[in-house]
Length: 273
Image (cartoon, rainbow, N blue to C red; front, side):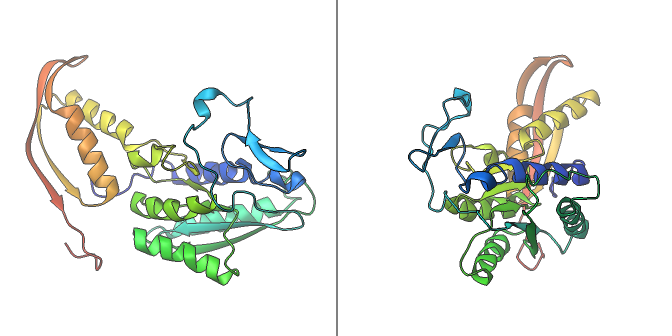
């Protein structure tokens, strides 16, 4: 339990880009206003109001409209920021750049109409988030500084949950939609805490269930757990141990799960342990 699960990275990154482009970014080009989750633009009042057509289970009663929720996009290109662990995940940046170039080409036969009109163009930039929350938040803020204190319209990334949590806390304050193709920490699924964050991979809870099922398939009932101190590994370890320990009566029979030894390995900022 020491590294972020990757699933099918190329496919999940493509899903992330498509979701980011369709989630309150592209629909706003025609009307010039970006509204938050479960909101719609009302031309009469020139404000974002509750979308009554949206299923009630998708609404957030404690949702607060953040500063910068309404961002003008008329006569302005779409600006996306990609935050990737370029030190250890270089193909993520390569795929992001390749996909952006294909979307911007209206004549290549691939998603030629996704931008909605003939004048929209995606400006994108990639910064290194590493696998670290501090690095990710600094990279996001550096982008704002370099663009006259203006946030991006959308954010794609990060790989590691620690980086995504940090960037989501900062970007969410400005109503910036963020989609991660790889971060799996369960806490990122809290829609009240992270209303502008989405991902294209399952949370750690599902991974924990899969691990339990695999170990039971081997007829094991006593295991040891070694984890790093990252949000990904810590969350996965907690979920697994909660599912594993105690008495069970399931498809594998009647059994009692036991943790023989559990230890958290602290990773220092210089990558030493």
